[in-house]
Length: 167
Image (tube, rainbow, N blue to C red; front, side, top):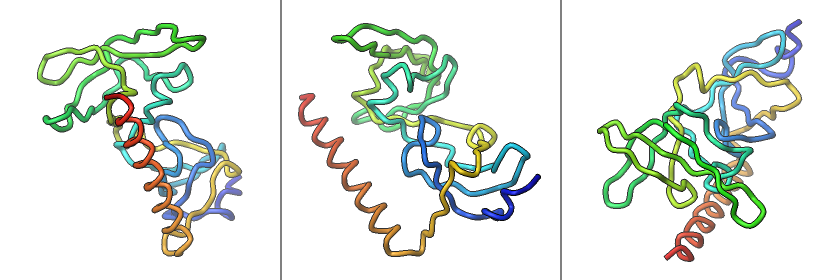
C-alpha cells in the first residue's frame, strides 16, 4: 500500500511536524522513498542539538553517540559520548556527559553551555515517518523564507541572550 505516493513524491522537501535531537524543529528533509509504514525522509547529517533538550531525560543522548562540540577559540571538536550523568536541579533531572574527543582527551560537559551537533551517517539521518506527521515545504515561497529567517533570528537572539546571562 503506497498511499504515501499520492501525498509525496521522491525529492519533495518536507518538514516533520514534531521534533527530537535528530530532527530539530523546522529542519527540512528530502523524501527518498516509501515503505508500507510511511515515508522515508533524509535529513541533514549534522543536526544542531537543542541546548535545552539535550540536557533533559526526553532529549538525552545515547552512549556511543558521535557529536561535535564548538569549543571557544578552538573550533569544532569531534568525539564520542562515553558516560551520561544525571543530577537533580530543583525538581528536574539534568543530564550532562563525558565526551572522549578523537584526539584522546576526555571532558565532562554540560551541553547547555555549548553549541553542539550530532554526527550521523546517512543511514542514521534517514528516518521513516507516518504521512500525517509530515508537511510539504515550498522553499521557493517568500513566506517560507521569511519564516526561516524569523526562526533563525529568534534562535540567534535566544542563544545570545543565554550566553549573556552565563557570564
